[in-house]
Image (cartoon, rainbow, N blue to C red; front, side, top):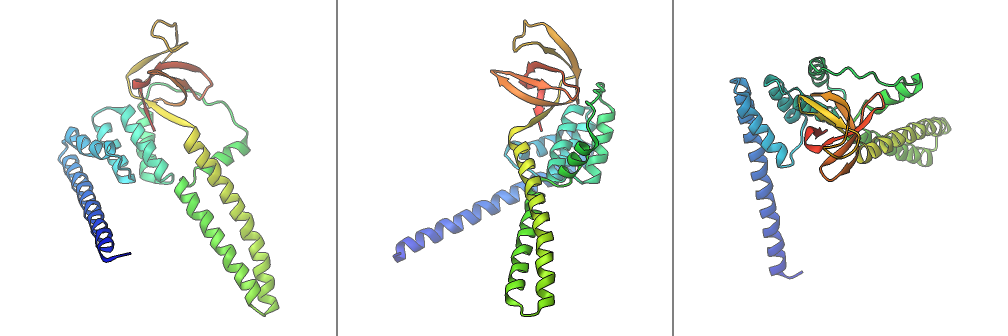
Length: 256
């Protein structure tokens, strides 16, 4: 590489650093403005600041949590629940988010009874939601690294006792690694293939087909969490927790 090419790449590198630094400062400024507006009870402007970050593609636990709180203060329960759910995707075990989500859900109208599940399925679901996709990724990598360490100990140590412990310990770690990898794969598959949303209109008439002239199937209300199964033009097919299915305009639901 000649000197001119090296200088060119170095310039591009520093330009990238400057751009990234500027973006980070902009994010920090908007978050601070949003927090200041919220503290001053100017929830409308707080929403504008937080929503600007979301629209620009920024994600974060504090951002979604604060945006959810702002929407809740303005009685937009559906949008509040959407953002609490987004925050839980990042940090499933966050108690503050769980608490505020429970309060918001208590203000919804629909009480959809979930189809009963076998207790093993319930345990499996609880285990899956212990961590986010990122969390299960870190755990799987941690077990993988531990396996490599134990393999190294087994082959490089000359003490039979240590070899024995590293061998059986490695077997246990392999089991946990496989389990964490399975949980990661299932979570990742859900992330990619199972879409969920929340109703953001006060009342919505769900249709039997993707047509405004179609007969009504049932009525749902703001804040209800639904599974999104299909999309045709500006219509989406939803499934409720009790198994009911129908179609409604895509604008009536915000994706989690």
